[in-house]
Image (cartoon, rainbow, N blue to C red; front, side):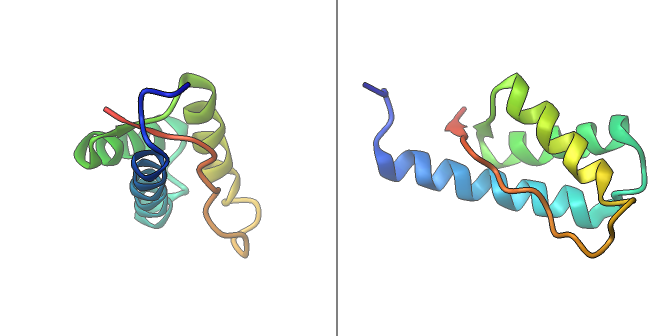
Length: 82
């Protein structure tokens, strides 16, 4: 059983998604290091976290937008309050 309610997890996922959208719109052509920094900054500001695998996936998918600018930001699968 999770230590967080479904509502808390949904709110965390929404906040993380907003951080992803901000990092995506900021400058997805900046490279993975700068994307990771911007995403981490957004997650910290929102008070949420994602696990390491999810973070790596999000950064990679944001970076991949340079190859397919028609695609939207990646979707956060799971996040928790920090």
